Length: 164
Ligand code: HEM
Image (cartoon, rainbow, N blue to C red; front, side):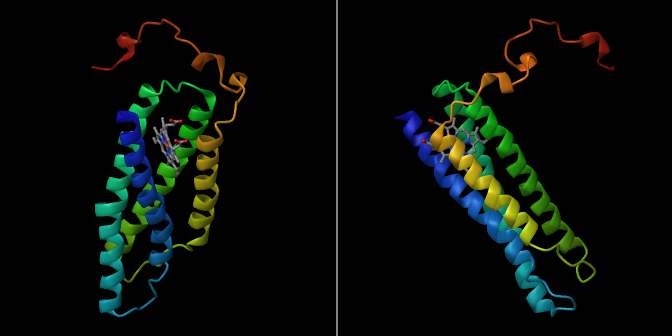
């Protein structure tokens, strides 16, 4: 029951997250050079509020629901690690989109948004790749993972190297 609820929350949140991430670069690209203050404010408010009040909270909820699922389902398997690596790239795109939203607000009138297509193309590759990994659960070779990451090494933390 807990797993089903968490999965439902995970999927609902990631739908909002990915749909929002895809729409923001397109919305930002609607800024025009020398545009009227009214039009600028409308796009600016829409992109700012969707990023801060919808897309980022959805990302946090998707991740917060996904992490306990790993432990509940005991999924310590290569396809999941591959999925997490791709999710890290998705988070990087998320941060970059946030950076553009911020810059468009701070440098009103002086800055043009970058073209939307590289971000949209990256998302159109990343999202289906993540979905394929999680839905097909391919039996990836554990040899792809470096030896260092495959077992606990039982080493002390280098506490004496931590600066005071
Ligand atoms: C840090 C982020 C994430 C974590 C820790 C995470 C973890 C998980 C885990 C452990 C499951 C359960 C898998 C199973 O029961 O077989 C799951 C399910 C799922 N995840 Fe994620 N996930 C994350 C992000 C994403 C993203 C970004 C997407 C899509 C773009 C995604 C798509 C899915 C889907 C569709 C399922 C349902 C799969 C099924 O039940 O067969 N996840 N996730």
